[in-house]
Length: 429
Ligand SMILES: C[S@@+](CC[C@H](N)C(=O)[O-])C[C@H]1O[C@@H](n2cnc3c(N)ncnc32)[C@H](O)[C@@H]1O
Image 1 (cartoon, rainbow, N blue to C red):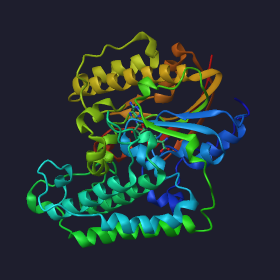
Image 2 (tube, rainbow, N blue to C red):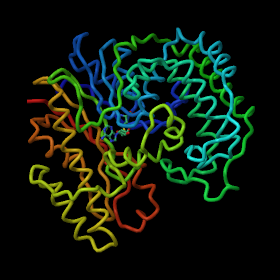
Image 3 (spheres, helix red, strand yellow):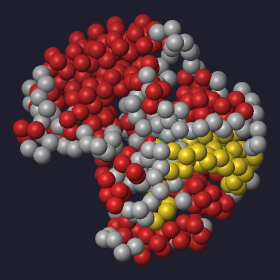
Image 4 (cartoon, protein in one colour):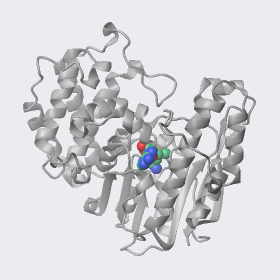
């Protein structure tokens, strides 16, 4: 573990340019962080790398570039599409515009928009119809029967080209809902009354879409985008981290950043994208949001705290329960219990997928609940022990801007600004 090169996992906003600008999603760490780990981890070419909370796919991208087989799981289908599109090789640049032509030609907006189309939450009927027609046309032209199998959808087989077209449509959706954004970057409001719904006519929607694809093509052709990826070696699938279905002891290295414990609603952050994907994946938003680690929904079943979660976790939960502020002993205690229960199950599942001696590198931030310190790095270090993941090394980095700090009510509490971002290095024993 001492040989691992650990650089700062802090994200640099300036890095989100070029091809990466098409993926403006909350990433756990920059690519260089994974690169340095992979180069110093003593891997063989046949080694397998896993990210069970793959998000926009920084780990799988970095591993694929180095020629390792990699597996990226995320419970949110939107993130699987995004991570797949990010792998689009330069050699596909030439095919994007001819495919765009076909998609536009096959695009026939319906006259009547079904009242249950989730896009109606933001868009006037004409705009919904235009976005939906593009989505249908992409699906008909670019999604094959392996993805659309009889028992549902299997995003494992979605091609990078199809994923790139969906990502272009996500960008159109995000652009059109910009007036529904708030100071919280993960939250998008919906229209309260009909008149608030965005009305952009169909030809303008298609124009925006065309612009995205043209910009993507130019970016792929840019000399700085000089890479070929063996993307067949990247397996991406919608899987719950509590039950990683990797073959036992198959993984050499895990590099990941688990969901935060600061009530970030990862489903809300991708509401528009989920609405666009609805016909493809028939996603039940509520169900998905419940399954998320860090869910803001109260769990259906009563959850008891467990000794094996460790003393730091139990003491934190006691402080939340005893906190005098409203709902601390009710809603907040329940959602924290839910977080830790899912996290303990996930650590167990990650351990099962690792080879003995395999490494798991987790980037974890501490935070505050009101004025109570949530020392998540310490909590996960202790929690991993009973699953036979032993902490061998820890490097701390200070971060100034945090997700929980963006919550206005947080300013009412006297607490240290910023946070510690810890890189926890575990070994499977
Ligand atoms: C901090 S982000 C990971 C960021 C990622 N490392 C990157 O660089 O883009 C956490 C991810 O965990 C996912 N997630 C939440 N609950 C999950 C669960 N139960 N199983 C799998 N993924 C989950 C969220 O959808 C989110 O994409």
